[in-house]
Length: 283
Image 1: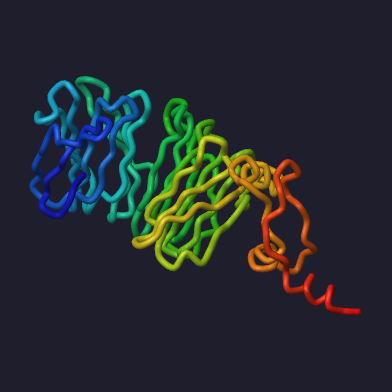
Image 2 (image 1 turned 120 degrees about the horizontal axis):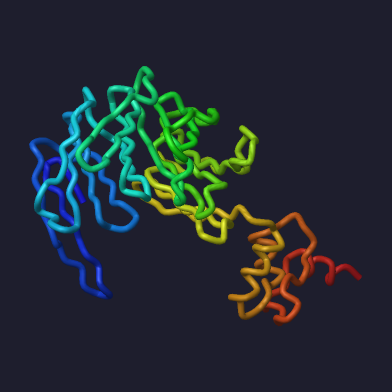
C-alpha cells in the first residue's frame, strides 16, 4: 500500500491477522505498486518518475532504483520471471525494463501524447497489454523482446485497468468512460461484451477463473457481470436456489416473457402474478 506521504507498507495476511512486515519511504508520493507473482519483488512508482524496488530477502533494503520517466509512474507490472518490468507514465511513454542481475536497461516501447495509464502481463508472460489516455489498448507479444501485436480501440476515455484470464486468451479493461469491456484475443478487434452505466470511473477489474463473471469497481461500488451463456447462468442459480421464482417475482425481475419453471428439480415459488389473477377473474 502506498500514498502521498511517500511511504510503502507491505502487509502479510494470515487467516484473521493482517500486519505490516515492512515500511519503506520514498522521496515523493507513491502512485503505483506492483508485486511479483511469487511475492519476491515489490516495485513502487513515484510522482516524480522514479521506480524503487525491494526483494523478499530484505524488504527494508532497496535493491534497485530505476530512472527514465520524466513524470509520474502511474502503472507497473512485473513479468512472471521477475526479470522484466513494464511501466507507464504521465509522460506518455511505456517503458520495458530488463532487470537481469548486473545490468538494468530500459527502452521506450510506446510514446504518445497524454498518459500510458495501465499495464498488465498475462499469467504465462507471453503477452502484455497497455492502455492509454485516448482509450486504446495495445497488445504485445512478450515471448522474448516485446513486439506490438495489435491495437484494440473502443473506450471513449482513459484506460485505467486491465486483467487477463488465467489462459491469457481473454482480456478485460476498465475506463474513465464508466464502461467495462471484455476482449477475445483470438483475432477479433471487437469486444465480446461491454458493460456501461457504472456511474463512476472503473478503478479495477478481475475475471473469475471460470471466465464467466467479471468483477469491477468504481470509487463507491463493486459490480459482478455475467458473460457466460444464459443456460450456464440458470444452472449456476439452480445449484444455489431453494425454489423457483414465483410468478409474482418473475413479473418483477424478468417481465415481458411468459413464466416458466427454470429449475426442474426445485418447487415453484409462492405468489401468483397479477396477469394470472386477471386471467382467473375472466368468466
